[in-house]
Image (tube, rainbow, N blue to C red; front, side, top):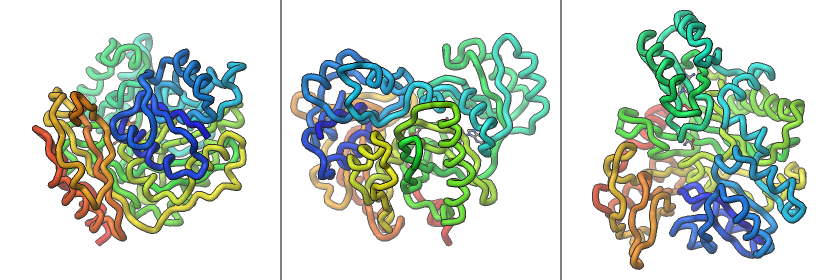
Length: 427
Ligand code: AMP
Ligand code: GLY
């Protein structure tokens, strides 16, 4: 198969790494990719939202399969663009249709969907500037802390948690007045859920589904889960409380009603569903849906996945996923993200990276790197994901931290406590 993968982060490097192991791969192209994806295929300088250029490229290279790593093109309708084009409709696309992608693209849509199909989630209401007074009243009925969510995509920054009702009211007003641009013209206010978060991943062909390994993401910048929210500073898999009982509840209370709901709404959905879950006393609640894999979760999920990714994606496109092999290795995986000093606030780019070639016990996935004058440099906040596998999380962590000692770039920063809570929780 000739495959085109869309995206350029650590997640897409992990996709390229896993796709390269597929027996079904002929040629892999990545648009736009990064120096890590270039190790497994050919990077092409096309933006993920440039549908016309993507179309021409697919025709020119006789692409058989499009794999969409990132959410924006899905929300913008790339699935439908392919399905509705005479020249492209034979190409297998792994990704949700535009309506399906609204599960991530609109929090209000996702909440309404969950309410309609009885999927456990926090109680909520949605407001616009026209009924802001009702929003203030609703806040008065909730207990602190208060969770306010911009309806649309806001680069992972659209959720604000407020400690007092007064700050919640001010924040609501700021959001409805454009704090996150068009994304916060509507705001979802919801109940705060207590518990431990876990990311779970589903691949579906719209009828059947496969559950992939779960992961825990570390979103805060500083040790001890302090500091600003980031895209993710590390991840581990497995997560100790995700046992057969919990998994069974997620399947019967969340995944199956979600797929049944998509069918009832006549939404074509052939791709990943990323469930951001809260485990509240053993009961799973949906915090959010995403229509793609997580980043950095993919960097620990795919290394544990005992499956041929292209075979799975073929099953997704042809609605034969049920017949495909998809298992989980019994090992543990961790990833620690090396970021540019200052991230997620202002940081410098263009720092030379050295030492990756000396890493022999970990996989180094590139996230924000570029090659300039034949030298590897930083080009983003999250720069590298250092993934290690071992029989336990503890041993895998030792490997990743040992590997990081071999890597250098100016102002490199990483969390020193990835997975510590899991190790403590297990004891
Ligand atoms: P999201 O962008 O939807 O992933 O939300 C960002 C983070 O806010 C989540 O990872 C949670 O830590 C937190 N969060 C969102 N909704 C809730 C909620 N209802 N209760 C508690 N925490 C929440
Ligand atoms: N790591 C969280 C996300 O990918 O949204």
